[in-house]
Amino acid sequence: MAKPIEIHLKGYNKTQSGFLKDWKTPECAFVGGLGSGKSWSLIRKLLAQHLYNQCASLLVAPTWADLYRIDTPEVQQACNEWGLTCAINTHGKGNIKFPHILVQGSKKPILLLSAEEPGRIAGFEVGVAALDEAARAKESKDDPLKDAFTQIRSRIRHRNAKLLQFNLASTPEGKLNALYRDFFQEESEDRKVYRGITTENPYLPDEYIQSLKESYSPELAKQYLEGYPIEYSSNRAHPNFNADNIIAEPKRVNRVYFMGCDFNVAPLCWVYGYRDGKDIYVVDEIVIEDNANVETAMALAHTKEWGKYKVEFYADPASRQRSTVGDSEINVMIKMAKAFNWSFNDKTAKSHPRVATRIGLLDAGICDSKGARHVFVSENCERLIDELQNTGRGTNGYAPGPHKDRGHILDALGYPYYELMHRPPVKMQALNLSII
Image 1 (tube, rainbow, N blue to C red):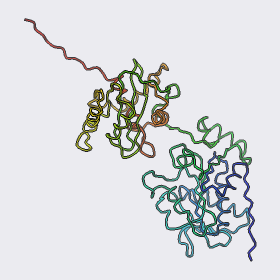
Image 2: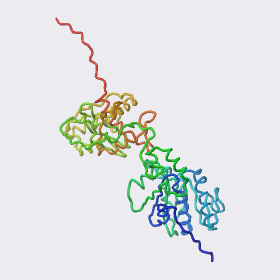
Image 3: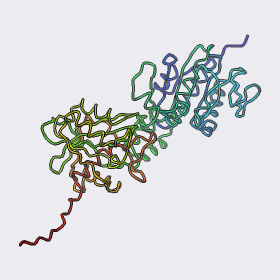
Image 4: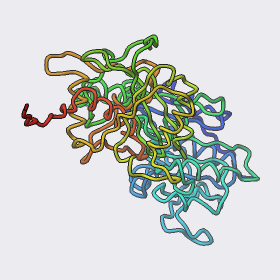
C-alpha cells in the first residue's frame, strides 16, 4: 500500500492561510498587491486539492507565456518542497495529447490551458480549477465562448470529484474586468475574496518594498501594494472633475429643464437638468444597458416625471437623419412627448461642433483656469459621475473602454452643455430699408 502523503497548507500570514484552508466556499479569490504571494498560494492549494480529489484538475493563465514563465515553475517548486514527483508535459504525452502535469505518478492530469482563446476551454471535466492573474483573463459580456470565467466554470463538474472549487489569484487591475464584476461588485455567499498586502510578506526585502512605494502614486499604491481595486484612467478626459462637482439632488421646481440624449443602443444614455446663469446642474439620468429604443426611454422618462415641467430636447444631431422604424429618433421623441402631454421644445442642433471642441468646453466648465466650477452633478447620477471620473480621451472623442460602452453619457451631457453655454448667437443680416 502506498504511503499516505502528508501536506501541511500554511501561509506566510493570516490572509494566505485563510485562502489555503478555505475548501468550502465554491469560489475563492486571492486578490493582492505585488509580491503578496498570490501565485504561491494558488499553486499550492491547487496541488493539495488535486491530490485529494484524485481526478483531473485545471490550471489556467492569461497567456501561454504566463503559464510557462510563472505557474509551471511554481508547481515544480512546490512539488520539490513536498517531496513529490512532477512531470510537466508541455506538448502532451501518451494518451493525453495536450499540455498537462502528472504529480506523484498519478494518471489523473492537471490540464494546462491559456485564457487567450476561452472557447478552447472545452471537452473535459475537472474537480478544481485555478486561474492566475484573473483580472487579465479574456472576457466578454456578450459571448460566453469568449469569456474565460464562464468557460472555466462550465468545466468544474467532474462526477468523481470529492471537492468542486474554483480558485483565482490576481492583482486587482482596476474595476473594468470580470474579477471586479464577480467578486467585488456583487456580494455572494458562494464567492469570497482574500486580500493580500505586499508589506505583509515577511520574505520581501525592505528595499524592494520601498522601491515599489516610490514607483506608484498614492492612488496606484492602493491597488498594487494593498490589493484594492481602484477606478482610474491613464488619460482622463475630464481630470478636474471631483467631489466639488457632486451635489445633493436639487429639489425640482417649476423651471425649464433640458434633456441631453445619446441614442446608442448599448447603452442608451440620457441626462436631465437645468441651467442657472453660468452654471449647469444635472439632476437625473437614464441608462438602458442593452437593446434600447427611444420608446422605452421616453416611457421611463415619463415615469421619472421628466415632463412635469417645461423641457427642451438637446439630442445627437445625427438623430434627425437616423431611421429605426420609419421615423427618426428625435421625431419619435416628439410624438411620444405630445402623447404624454408634455410642454416641450426641440432644441436639437442641425450639426455637431468638433468633438474635441465640445469635450474641451465641457472640461472648462467642470473647472476653469481660475478654479471656478460651473458643472454640477447630482449624487444619484451614478453612471455620469463614474464616467466623468474615469473615462479616458480617445483619438476621436471619448475612449470607449474594453466593453465599448463608455462615453455615451458624456456625449449626452455635451450636447445640451454646448448649445446652452457656447453655441454662437445667430448673426442677423442687416436690412437695407428705404422709407418713402
